[in-house]
Length: 265
Image (tube, rainbow, N blue to C red; front, side):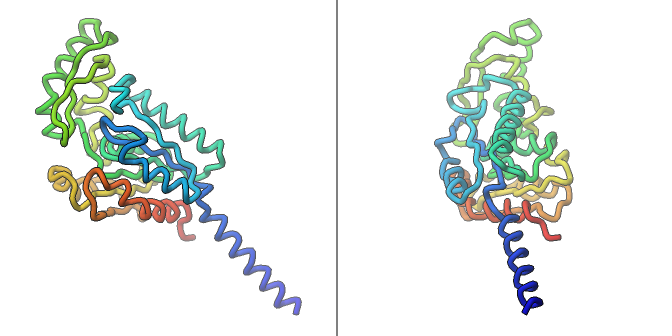
């Protein structure tokens, strides 16, 4: 009888440990919107869905939002993510992830190449400063911004151009010194550079919806192949458009985070 209860107690202990290991409450995730967007836009359902499952979520408004228009440089944006991760740790998160949609996805990849987190979730990442279309549409504006910086006017607000696939070219008012950091082809927003520099120990969920923009679909395989080998890195292709990809990926993102948070022993 004692032997039976001993085995039973051991099974209970194993089961309790498994539950503790997979609890979403121990997982924290930063969520970032796309260019010109906001936390209440295309990422809202993703953030609220994860919160409903018990995850610790920080749904941030980033410098590329429609309200902020690059009001800080890329280094300050990385610091904003760091601050959000600290708050998630204070809430009890022990496994940390950074997720982003479109431009947010590209910046999440940049963050993962420089900072230690458990995983990066790039949802339909785009807006790479090194892409041909961005350089064609914004190269002249980048030259203008660099000229203003060289003339000592980098901290003065200027009317500069931005580009987004569905919207085309439009005007933003920001400091040239900030603008240069966001659109430098060799800078933080060079997506391929970020992927190649990803920390090998950082798992990546690379999400490319089946109905994404054609130029992003062409980059799917070379981009994914640029990531360092990691047994938990995955390519996920939901049946969705560029804008619906965050909502369509909610369940897979949840499942994958728990997989990364609880690797097989």
